[in-house]
Image (cartoon, rainbow, N blue to C red; front, side, top):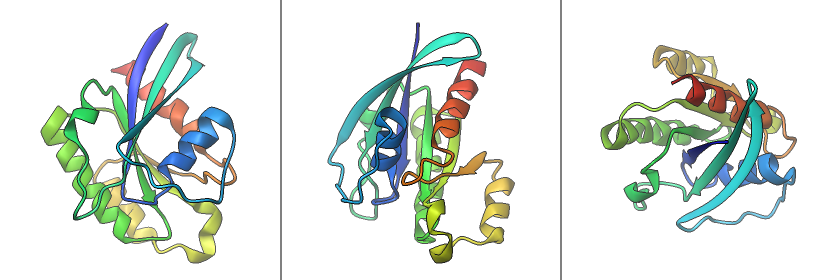
Length: 165
């Protein structure tokens, strides 16, 4: 059994905890709960005939005042970078986080999740933002923690990326 630590990173209230709950337990709650520090879950899966245990570190959100504790990142094999499609400012936080990750622990496989795709009528990101992500050579996908759309695929895709390195 291969074990891989992944971190979920992003601004406050982008849906990191909801994504983990959807992936690990197939549940969604409308009630917002702020993560304090880190919460660790695990899920076993089969990726290309390999048994893999994902140790999923749901790390508190980041903003101008509260920065992520760098000790939470040690030992990570990859990360999911979550952006809230209904809040354009979370894209800037994500860009800052990628740079900090690279400075702290080097280049790791990561996937950007454009979350809350079920709220497309409230979407603030536009095609130019997608082009910016592509220009940065970031792999990204749209997800909805509420409906589950794209969630399992995103975790499996990151697992495949980590196994390939």
